[in-house]
Length: 445
Image 1: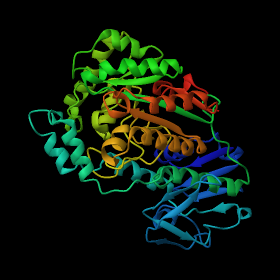
Image 2: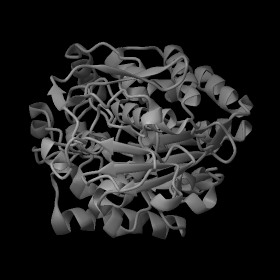
Image 3: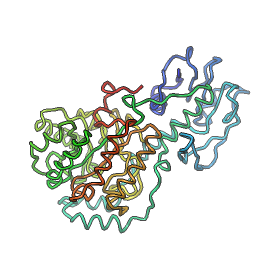
């Protein structure tokens, strides 16, 4: 599909990001199948045009009688068809009602119901600026680390105060609802089918990651790594550089057919509150410490407690990281906000100049300690989510901890079933996140 964009650079970037899931050739309006216009007057051309609404002011440049009668409706939930079986949900801040919103494609012009650009920007801003819970602010303000409190006590509090029911994955993907809504409009107008990109010629991609929060976890990681090697499944291990002494031999084994990433310097939850030179120094220190240990570049970062904001992303870019994987697609109870929280997408994207690889599958800690599932139930749920992500040709990122119940007990057969499933699925490419951050390493065609 050949698509042209008539918008400023910032807004054009958002439109390209939304359509990054499909094979789209970005061309000049003269040779385009469809022209997408935002914030500007439509070109004087016979090309089929999608005029994304923004505000009444953005349409003032259009001559009568071309100006459509566009009004806004109160925000209501909208279902967007992603596949014949899956509809995604979004509650836009503004829903436009125009006489051109649902016109026949033969007219050559469609004004969608959404301001795709503003809705995308709002989702990103809402995610990166979410307010920290009072309990989190208190726990990270003490002179001693929060994890001095026994884990069973912290888990009991998380479970006791959790009042939120689980949502199905396709209920919590508003950013992807925007993607498919825009794709649907393009297909309607062009009468051509957009082709989704593949992952190294596979339908979807799976990424196994582990956070090693404690010395105990580092010791237990070897058993997990050996099991993964039995199934020829690579994995990424995020390690705090200065939380405990790092065994070079163990780190070397984990890096074999895998990846070592930074998990900050300390697992104290205080990264979110830093800025400027202190933030940049901490991010650089963690990277450089691990690079001296491994003798290899450290490309990826995941913050303890999945902390994230604009400053952290910018600091990671300045420190030379290739990607971040700290933002969940959705969590029932995020440890910093203490409420449901997530970015709402199952695809990597660019944020603040760095690749963000969202944690698209709810992590083991949330399911074990907050929801209260048993290890076997966790894996069953993960496999169900995997099927949904596969249907959407997405990126399935798992997170487990070697010191938590899924992996620390003698019986880890549930996790072995996950490995067997991923290894035997010919439609799924299993890789490490550093490959997803570098388009030169993979074929997305």
